[in-house]
Image (tube, rainbow, N blue to C red):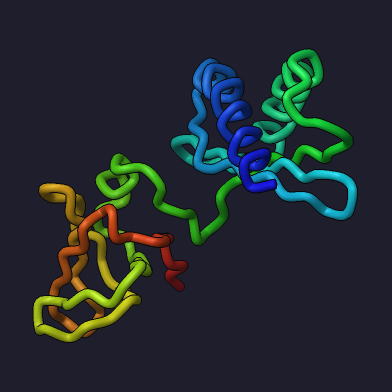
Length: 161
């Protein structure tokens, strides 16, 4: 089952990237999940200035046509295209440069020390960027943290009021 999910996400990514590039958008993430006997394919897209409903409709229309012809997904499925939301995930190294100065939450696979020596798995603070393969954050408590990119389990922007 997980192999099918991985294969579907990989194939959809290959198909979606040229479509999104032609529309001036980027692919943030692809998810495929089985819901009962059917599947749900979710694409999260973004562009400078943000995504609107028309952008989602355009991508859905173009991608759906190609997916129907290529027959990538076995069985029935629903296609959902949306923005990544206010808590946008940081997936690619370029994301850590693009969102410098923003408030982020980074979760690691294992406890890691911050600059003060406190071990933790959750780091919240201002993103300072990527340096030598490490995500650098100025934590809300004041100290810094340098987290190896390969140790990051999940990273998201945090909503600020």
